[in-house]
Structure formats: C-alpha cells, structure tokens
Image (cartoon, rainbow, N blue to C red; front, side, top):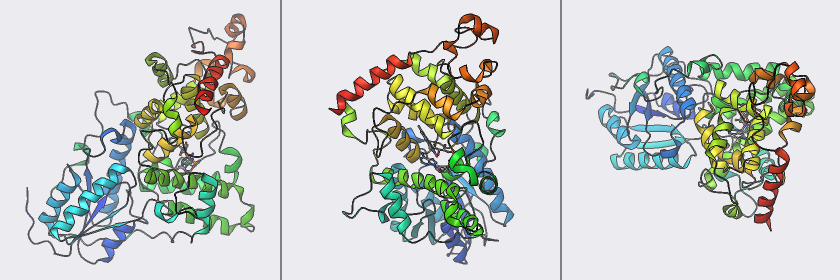
Length: 488
Ligand SMILES: Cc1cc2nc3c(=O)[nH]c(=O)nc-3n(C[C@H](O)[C@H](O)[C@H](O)COP(=O)(O)OP(=O)(O)OC[C@H]3O[C@@H](n4cnc5c(N)ncnc54)[C@H](O)[C@@H]3O)c2cc1C
C-alpha cells in the first residue's frame, strides 16, 4: 500500500453513502468550501448491514451509479477512491495515509447505517480528526417533527401537516465546478471489483434497458416528469397502464436526486403557473414525497420496523407457511392476472407500480396469509428502489400491522382493482401476453369464461395460463376471520 506523506494536512475526506450526487450535496459542499484538498471515498461495508445488504437489483444499480459518480468527479478534476471493509477501520487507514483533518458525510437513517456512522465518528474522535455529518436525504430531520407531547407522529396526515408548517427546506445547492485534489491519490479498487454483479448469469442486462442510474439520469427523470406527467399526476398516479408517476424512487433511494431538489423543482413549476393553488398534481406529488419522509421518520424512531410488527397485537396472528405458494407468487404464476403482471414487471424491470405493489402485497398477506416479511424480503432482493424505510413501512401498512395502516378488513380484490385501474387490460397484456387476446371485460377474470370461450381467445387455463391458486372469496373470508381474532 502506498503511504502518502505529503498530502496537505487540511485535506477533507467526503464519505459517500446514499448520496451519490454532486448537486445539492451538503457534505461535498462543505469539503469544497474548506479550500484544502478533497478526497471523495466510497466504502463497501457489508459487516453491519447483515440482512440489509443491498439486494441483487440494488447492487446492479449501485454498480452503475458509482461509475456515474466517479465520472462526474473526474469531469471536475477529482476522482473516487473505492475500498471495502469495516467503514471505521478503512476510514482510519485513509485518514492516516492522507493526513486528512476532517471527514464529512450525509446522514443515513437505517439503524445499521447509524451505528456504522457512530463507529466512524468514535474512531475519528480518538484520532483527533473532525467528523461532521449533514442532512442530504430528507426535507425535515426526524427529530424536528414531533407531536405537541414531543412524541413521533404515528399518523401520516397530521405528520405532513406539521411538516408543511415548518420553514421551507433550504434552496438546493449547485454542484461544485472543481475540487482541489490531493498531491497523491490513496489507492483504491476498481468499481468492477466490488461484489455487486455476482452470479453466473448476466441477468442484470435486462435492467440496463429500463434505467439510467446516476445523477444525470435522475435529473432527466425529474425534469421529464415535471414537464409531461405532473399536471395529471393526481388522476394518473393510480393507473399502472399509464406512465403517470415519476419513477424517481431508485434515484431518491441512492441520493442521486435530493428531496430538496424535488421540492424546489416542483415549487418553481408551481410559481410559473398563474394559480399555484390549482395544481392538484404537484400537491399530490409532494404528498408522496411526504410519505417517504414519514417512512424515514418511522424507521428512525422505531428501528425494529423492518423486523417486528409495529402494532404488537399482530404478534398473535397465525401466518401460513407455504413455500410453493410463495414461489408461485414470486414467479408471477398465481393465475390472478394483475398480481402476475405486477410480479413479472418487478422481475423484468426491477420496479413495480405503487397501486400494483399494494395489490400483490394484499394478495400475499391476506389471500395467502403469508407473513409480510416474506414479501418484503423478495422486494428487497428484486427492487431497484429497495429502501429499508419505504419497504418496511409499506409492507406493514398493507398487512395492517403498521403505522396509520390500512384497516385490517381492507382486503384488495385484485379483480376489481384491475378493472378500475387497468380498465382496458393494457398493463396485464404487457406483462402477461398469453392473455393478450382476451376481451377487456374478462382480462382480469379469465376463469369466468367457459373452456370453449377461452379456447376461442387462445387460452387454456392450467396450460397456457395457470388457474387461480386460491379462491379469492374463500381466502378473503379466512383472512377476515384471522384478523378479527386478533382485533377483539
Ligand atoms: C408493498 C410496498 C413496498 C414498497 N417498497 C418500496 C421500496 O422499497 N422503496 C420505495 O422507494 N418505495 C416503496 N414503496 C412505495 C411506492 O410504491 C414507491 O415509492 C413508488 O411506486 C415508486 O414509484 P415512483 O417513483 O414512480 O413514485 P411517484 O408516485 O412518482 O412518487 C414520488 C416519490 O415519492 C415516494 N413515494 C411514493 N409513494 C410512496 C409510498 N407509498 N411510501 C413511501 N414513499 C413513497 C418515492 O420516493 C417516490 O419515488 C412500496 C410500496 C408498497 C405498497
């Protein structure tokens, strides 16, 4: 290992984590303003994350996003040093090698990320090096939004109302044009050497067709959404057959776009309209960003959210274990068209529309009575936007065990959901092409046609497409009884 002795003593290390951007990056800005050399660093540390090491699809995203970040840094004359190991150990080595006087980073809110940052800070303190963190991931820090009794909010609407009464998030900051470089770069490994794209099959190439990870791709998504889809967002956001949502979730998760950038881009768009109050699209969109904030606040205040029922009474619920049914759900072969369409969209693209996420999650936890943790784990591995706060809070919300959750008796009927939100069956036809010939009225319930009628449309249930693995009415009743039991 090369020992660098003549680096300026005032070098600052910027520790990138889930803030893979140059624009509106408070930690990077702090380092840039320090005038000394800036050493951007990424550390792959899977020791603290345990079960929450990024899943397969997320690791693909990270691979691409780090490459983009490195290029962006090189474009302004800097670079990215990549290493693996326990963050506090690697950081101590880097500090010694570079004689850095400070390490700066943006805060993450996952319990393991908090403990890692605390370990790094402790080690820096012992070396007499400044360790400073910033808010780059949220509009409002979790400890700043509290009820009158100084408790965290457990219900979304008052939470979001309280947020909107706080002072507006600061303007987002531009990316630095250049960064002072150290006299010598500490050694690192190449991004390709990180354990991100493992496995014998290059399954991830299908994701390349759908996404452009990185800051530039994220900014384009945001601008494109504001221009094209935001005005109709309120009405279209529930329609999986339309391109009605932003698809910003993976960019927000990896911090390629900051929520402040989103907030101010929307505000500017609103100001350009004559009557800002008349933009239900933007209000509805900011409210969804509000749900993201709410999930992060929940995870911060209730760090067991990914593992334990938020509502204790759900500990008594008898979940069913059925590996075959679980796999059938994962593969998108349940025989319920909208559920299968969603699960196949997820497998093919690493993303699923929010309405369909709710439908497939309700089907798993209520019709199949499988634990929400099974669904959350599958999403964790397959979503490009897998996010510990949003995923855990949303699964618990659908299962009924979470904060401000759907009432337990709300069991989505996938047929009605399909007919309402995918009225022509366009979404189902895209992902379940074997049903493509069915008329709109039956595409969400093929089993209601006779064999002869199905045959006319080229469908043989049990052969070209599965029969439903459960009876929706019977399993709905079974779930109601089980849920009733714990609600007495
Ligand atoms: C079972 C289940 C699991 C989910 N798992 C995740 C996950 O792992 N990661 C994730 O980012 N979202 C998750 N969501 C929330 C939501 O489905 C996605 O954020 C959304 O579909 C992403 O698409 P979009 O960017 O086009 O959303 P848009 O509708 O354009 O919304 C903009 C942004 O707001 C945030 N947002 C929107 N809806 C929600 C919500 N209900 N809860 C929290 N934040 C929201 C996201 O950051 C999103 O990118 C989950 C929802 C369900 C029902």
